[in-house]
Image 1 (cartoon, one colour):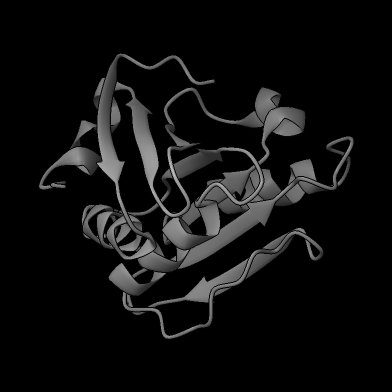
Image 2 (tube, rainbow, N blue to C red; image 1 turned 180 degrees about the vertical axis):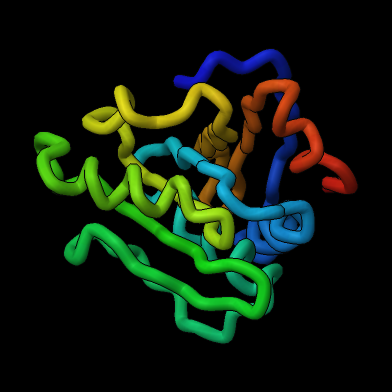
Length: 157
């Protein structure tokens, strides 16, 4: 996990609330942010990405890229690069693709199951942990360095 100086926590009782939270976060994105999404299978990561994409104005259908490794969603503001590395057992060529998209000033990169690429992830990234607390409810914890504190502005429950 990134070296984080701060954390912010919230309980989300529904998938809609998780999506709305991500929409709020999306309004603060400037480009070049890396967001690591951490949870068990079915933890709410794709739900969060769906809300974030909608918050950026994307009309693309958001699906988990588990079998494709990555999906790209377009919005008027930023390109959303969504990686799911669950089925990846070594970083290999994906490291090069990740390094390229993480440096795109007009993009935001979201990574699920990032353990195999942790060595190339920037220290200054937002890490979002999702913990099941019920069928659709989650405890969500945001870990972030001071440089990314602007991402938390205006987030509410």
